[in-house]
Amino acid sequence: MVEILAEAEAPASVTCAHEAIAARLSPLLGKADVSRRFVLLVDDPRDFVADFVARGAGRTVGANATWVRIIDRWRGRGLLAVAHPGYVTSEADLIVLAEPGMLVRPVLRDLCVWAFQGLGLQRVVARLQPSEAHLAGYLQRAGFWHEGVARDFFGPDADAALWGMSVFRCRWLPPPRLAIPTADTSPPSSLVRH
Image 1 (cartoon, rainbow, N blue to C red):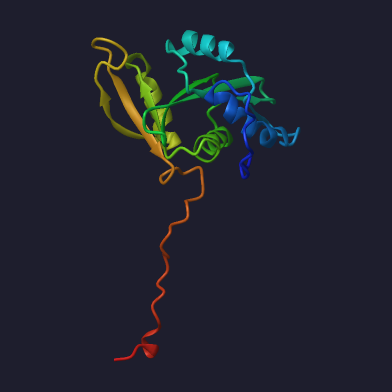
Image 2 (cartoon, rainbow, N blue to C red; image 1 turned 90 degrees about the vertical axis):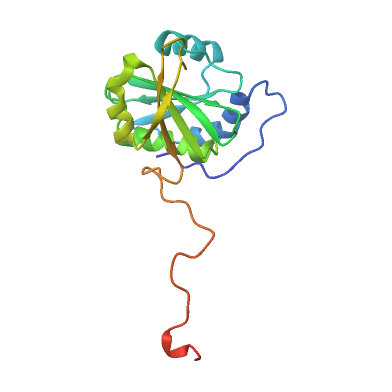
């Protein structure tokens, strides 16, 4: 798994949100061990990603979108994940296009590290078209919760099944530290004054 620990300043010459994020994450991803099975890439051109998402999901890549591509070196397969931050900056719409066999535990863990630690998101949301109902089992096993239906999201009478995951319920990451102590810090009963 790639650890995303430090934040570097983005160069002043960036033109979109993805370039700023890629500039911050590229040095960290470049340090990955070459013997690693899964490789994370953030340097794909916007036109390539936009065309791939349009053909694969029938959606567009927004102005603030950012993406990561994960390649399985052993099997020669790949996955493309695109996050669309919405109006709420801590939440993003997630589009994942994957070849068969790519949604395995190490990849899910890397995607969660990318979304929650690398991008700093609190929630990710996946919307399934009615023709993709068979993918609901994948989302549930990945840790997403079914949150309802977004009426007419994909057009007239084309509802979206809404699935979400928060950083606090993500099973692929260690639980975040709480600001309050979770252990009982009261003195033992023999020291309590009555």
